[in-house]
Length: 260
Image (cartoon, rainbow, N blue to C red; front, side, top):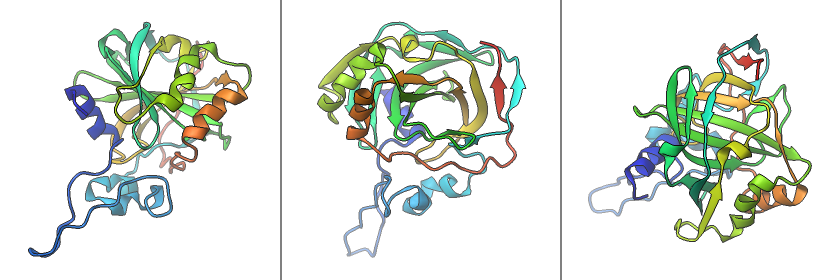
């Protein structure tokens, strides 16, 4: 990826294959590392063995996603959302379809007094997080980055229902997206992609893809959006089964913001 923001994000969320070579003897050619994915030979169960930089995928104690249970109900300070209609590059990164925001500085959220800029959004099917064991057909992650490189992610579940007109530019472009980011460009207002009620489950977790880095502030919206069966099929025809299984909570507190 060419921009500095994209390079930082690629390092943070691991949406590209591992860099480097596995060295052998001096005269022998180096072996290529196995790229991470979701198959039996490169999926979540073996991520930690694919690259030493993915050790947290096995050894981490605050990993994501999780099954959201035993929440603490609180009247938290609402997440402040300042989104606007924006141009995005929609492309296939090899693990999901992603939309990268051209001007992230125009899309800001404030969480616990700290500002984060929207960098990109992408999806997992089925959902990665669960609510009391319930899995949804789709989960969209809105990835934000602060000025000092911290990450905050808003997770949004989608279930089958009426067609979602706000999502049509994205879903209609899924199969024109390629890995060059040169083809599909869409105009989206992130505010219109969210559910009407913005109550959230909040906890400290990690990236759900290698390198599984921790310290991510998760804000999973408790109300799903709806999409038509055809829209959901557009997602799953591109990628299906690109979800990491739920990880141990390990005593972490999961807060539920009870007031919209």
